[in-house]
Image (cartoon, rainbow, N blue to C red):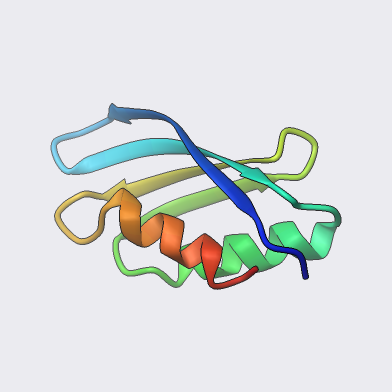
Amino acid sequence: MKKFFIGLIFVSALFAAEKTVIIEVEGMTCPLCTSAIKRSLKTTPGVVKAKVLLSTKKATVVYDDAKTDTSKLLHAIEVVG
């Protein structure tokens, strides 16, 4: 699998401890890439929901900011590549 280029695009608060981040993930070339990234994100403690789309090359992640942060989310994507 290729290395992924990761760019943080947007962070907003949904609830008191939940936040949503959209991460741009360049280098995804097939559905297996999206599945692997989604699985890695969902196993990260604090992640509530993860959606990864090959067509947009973006991952949308809802997470509990008391349990994780964006650096851990980025790391979860990087280890897949």
